[in-house]
Length: 173
Image 1 (cartoon, rainbow, N blue to C red):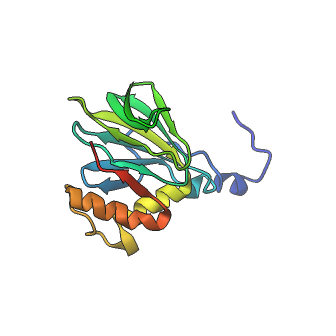
Image 2 (image 1 turned 135 degrees about the vertical axis):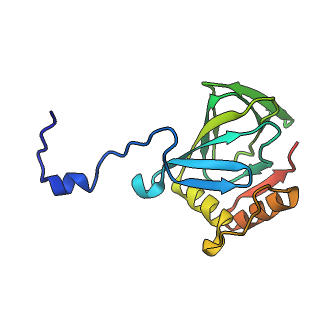
């Protein structure tokens, strides 16, 4: 049994947080259902982690932002877009267990071009979490985006994120 060396009140205010697979705060972005696995307020605002399922035919346009983002494929297959050394756009297919790192300002995208859902874990800084939440629910609004995002809705979503230096580099493929 663990024996605390400090008063229990001090320890309980800074305790370990356990989440089961379906637990955690949720955020809907069109057909995307993000589950926050670690929010900035619980990490000293150092990082945030969310999990989401990308359905077949879904993905993001090529975009960039001034903070790094890390993706870990939990299930299924996703194609990640990047620039080759010769400046040509290319796709890198990643299955379960593969990871992708998008350094700050690196144009990146992903698409589920398969026929099965893919589940990913995304890690970034708290700024990314705050930006996503504000883009979806600006000023606390709950009707900013419809349940199914049209290309115009995606444009509006990304336009609202430009204040956070998130820019679309190319339309979805």
